[in-house]
Length: 445
Image (cartoon, rainbow, N blue to C red; front, side, top):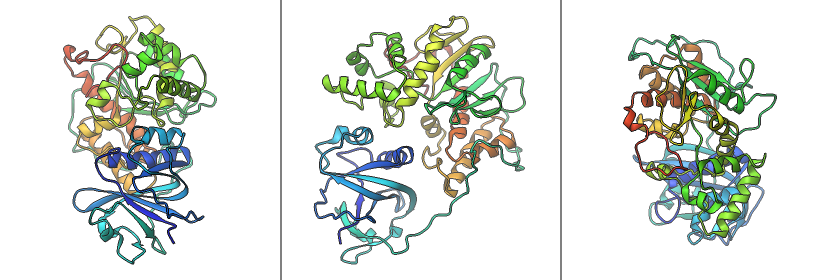
């Protein structure tokens, strides 16, 4: 008895529930384990090799987002673990128990379909109809299975072409300069190749967009991206934070953006730098989860040194931005840190982007398209179709490639390409508009 628990995440007094669930799931996928906190202490819980947790949060129309996972530990104090600290460091006074989990799965379903029952044999969805937020739970003997989609051993591999009609595409004027959307990655690189890097390019001279992965052709790594930027010209949109929050910079002693870049290159291991910075902020009583102005404005839940982002943040500054900062300003400008020059065929302009925000501005969900499930594949099809319908010419091979990449990186690069197209059409006065510090940076919204 008391080997399993079910909880409902609600608004108020903690992280925003939907974002919390997705961050828990993402951390589990990245690290193998993750954490979830509860207000109730669960002191009668008895850990067994089979203990499970079910966590859900309501959606409109009587639906829920549900996370299920194996419980591997329970703690009464906030653990000194980066994932737990990122998720719950600002809410220590709220929660009484922290549950270490693994093998997390995520799904959407009707509230009436929540599996299992309470120990007094009440259907689970009835148990949470009132104020209850924590129950001891008996899972179904045979939990419902989800249809899986077989992933290729190489997600970037081009599948066989499917004939997808382009008759309904809204034809748009060709860009006047090359446009690039770069889905960036701080992942480990081997022999000049990074399998998580993706570049989508729309060149005025080409009929279709080109889509490239870091393991295609001769390979591509982070430093190689900087070299291409300096050679190719045009407008580049990249999805990692270009600068730190101003309050964090003040605590760390970074008086200029150049100071920050130097710090990012001062050690080869981003984990070491992240841990050093955490200790500095703890000393100065600066919240680890401090966000930039643009992140607050768009209600982004991630921040530059968040556990799933800090490698991108640090390696992006070290391997790309530092090279661009050292280059001739006639060749490249990184906004808002350099003088504004409109993108040109022989001059690159580089700005930060955020795929999640671009998707929301398109009226599309930024959740649930980065896994191997059939529902995620359908969402990838919807996103790439919407980008295509907007007038960006994506050939059938690359359409199939993007929807076949179960990690969603190819989709993100196309989303950033869409952001580049919108950005290019802005008036010159809009490129530097906004109350931004000279160290934080921003992305177009």
